[in-house]
Length: 203
Image (cartoon, rainbow, N blue to C red; front, side, top):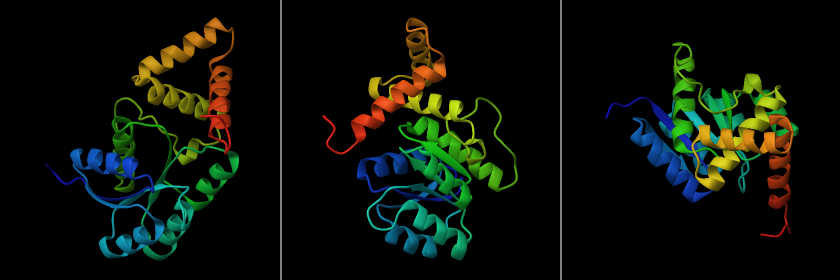
């Protein structure tokens, strides 16, 4: 299998980390992985990856801390993968200069095209042709309707094991049944998920 480039993947969820590492390796990348920020920085210094894929919220050093170090000391570009898409997070993502911002939950078949696109752009080859990958580039974070629909579709894909097309169709049916716009229905779904994620919320 051809080596498409060296990538550092950082996530404190071991299952997510294993899934990302396996999927990107199968896609032809050389992957270095870490489950915490301290190890991520050490590995980045040693291996000098072409791109880093960083979870944001981790114990110890956050993805933002790692990104700042990569930018200031190693000049290694990075993209974020996070379940959070609040305004403060988006502001920090923009300020740090991430090449992309992917919103969980996404499956590996969506993440690989996003990584391919980032690598191609970093090498000056321009964007991929074909369907756009399901992710939110940092340059598009200002479009809240695009962001919330993408998040809602991702939630449905993860919860019901749906393809992106089927998840979008289900969201559209819900919108039609309740006479809401797609964006309104997506926002209701995302808000419900965020409530369930709060500490002390019923499981």
